[in-house]
Image (tube, rainbow, N blue to C red; front, side, top):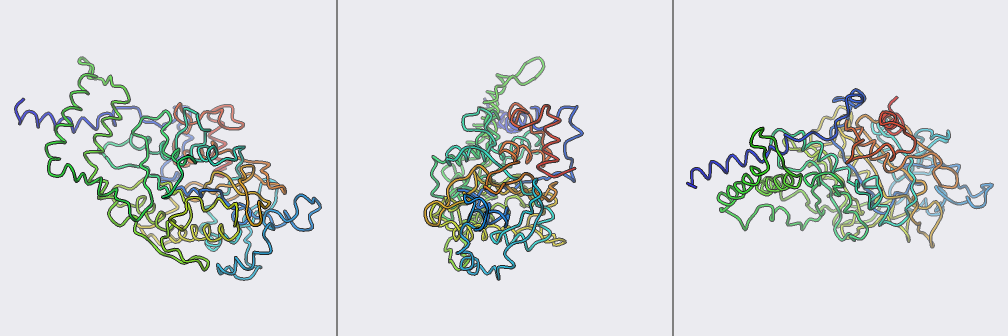
Length: 499
């Protein structure tokens, strides 16, 4: 083949590389009978930030404080000195170090739960309690499941399905698939990212956040380690290829075009490809455009940050670094992400499981959770602010999630154990209406609750995506729905609060 002809064919192959992404049916559309029930632009969220408190959320001192539960004089001896009152003797010292003021200002009434009990916000979420605009967009969802080990609970929390389920896919995977299938611009940069802490133990299965389940491989989010020493941008620069990219890329494109031509009907031109070939085409396109991703990430996305929280000095603040990077990706002026998951292991970069407080619960959770939420609140626009580098709750859904909560009673001297039987997630912004769904009883266990599957499906619904499909969720994954329309109505009304 003459050089001119080869380069012409290679150019055609580069154009053809986008065909698999525009010819396939778009995932996430509703059937005609349910299309009108999906949330439409202007109401739905267009992007999502998920914060995963790795190790468990301190429910009873943060987003679900029932002051009358667990008092020292409770009629039921088994419930005395539990929940909010568990480490009451240490409240003054810990909370004063964080500058929370007198005891009269520690708790903020929020909304009644399903039992009519007023849920208060605790000191750990002071940054939210001081922002009425955030409270007006916030919904607390009571959750419950029966998996106590991290290894099993984390996959359930990140995907909504149990480990081993062939449909198990991360929320970012669904979102990546949805937007890639609708792309007509030839975009090669990811729509979904997962930012995981360094020093993570892979046996805890945080990697399930990028599981693809039955989606094609191109739906997998890009996972990055939050480290100021990350060399990913150097690798993405394709330094070893260098100036040879001008020759290597057309050759690779030629090989792709040859493969595509063998799986095309010569009469109709219809694609006869297996989905793995689509994955190959997408991967090759991403490889060729890797320098574009390097430019997006830049050299300062994960710049080390120092901070001081509740009297503790954080030399390398991984929480702030992750949130800054996530917001930067979501608000990028030309190629914004649609989903970023920050797996928060605490403010100190060398800690992966700071919220797993078997030893020192109150101080550790107060410092880390207060710092995380304060950092987040600073990067959400105030009413009328309009800063394009901050999150706008009118078009952004923020999700606070964890694999479980912490026990309402002590483990060892000052610690707590895993507690999947009654904890909360928080939805903020987008189409979410304020309030509380569910109820936790005086024993610390959920009495009315949603499941992790229902939470994840509701996030898809909030983004205007139809959650029911062979790759997504089934009606049977919900507790009491009989049809898909019933299920979507439940997600909209109960979990998102839309009446």
